[in-house]
Image (cartoon, rainbow, N blue to C red):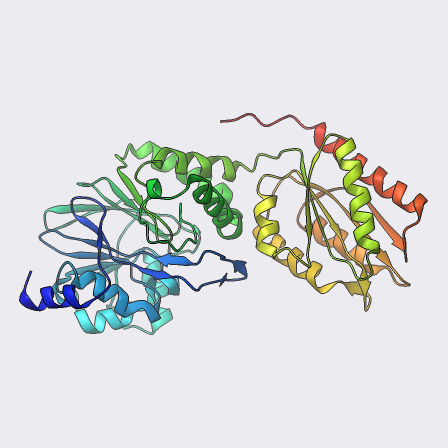
Length: 414
């Protein structure tokens, strides 16, 4: 280490963390992030980048633009950043490429590599000259000095440009957003963090980011398994590095991607004067009597991403809304738009709500649920405040949904 590098190391509060023989984590921690594309990130996040030291020094991914100095400081705790020979971009999204143009200008690496779609995305994103980024092919192995990198395109997981990079000598898979989570911690490895937090945040991430690509994930897992890779670590672009529970991380993705449906029913609703809330409670009693489990999510206290997470293993979605200005209540419209984009499969459901004179909300819910390919069991709308007879109908609707749920085969653990 040069005297300049030693001074930087001593003066900076940021340090790299060793992952394997040749790999260091040099990313950034974002303690304050609380929203990611409409998904609530209550524990913040990390933007992970990795420095690979060999005869040729390689940087895997960069970080969000405001965190460039933190990235460079962590790199400088190991080597002079100017010594970086190559940069590999696994994913062009701005939280992983935001400072890439600045690093190219400052460090002047010999080459910047990305997938063919990554070349296109980075060039268009940052208005780079066509020869700035070099395309690397799916399945290609590249020798950078004495180390070997194998590349695997993972299109639409979750962008068209997404790519895995595998460092052969260390058995480290750089998986961009796959197997990650939004979790800001000072701990860098899975075995240093409470397993319940890991599972919850990984599940939340999958449900809110990767669920639309579930069928592709199933194929990817089979493809990776068929390659016979030695996996000593999975280095994701968000959250901790998996080094202890690698099999568990892969297995959970397999279960979530399969979208095996349970007898859990999620009731999502909002209410103006408690009439729709009363209907929701009566429906829940019918569901319970019919043998379903119930998750209650009133939208005055539940975030859209909480709903998405609960839907990952639920079997039924029941949505309630009052009618306001001849339309759905705004919070209900919001969550349905969000869920529709995530494309959950294999659900049964129902629509319900109270109204004063028009009553259009229930029909609008049904139209959205139908567009989501939810199998509709029934619907119910009640004028003004539900009386005993109306609440009995709500109970019956819950019972009908439960009967449909419990008639399904029970999923078996894979």
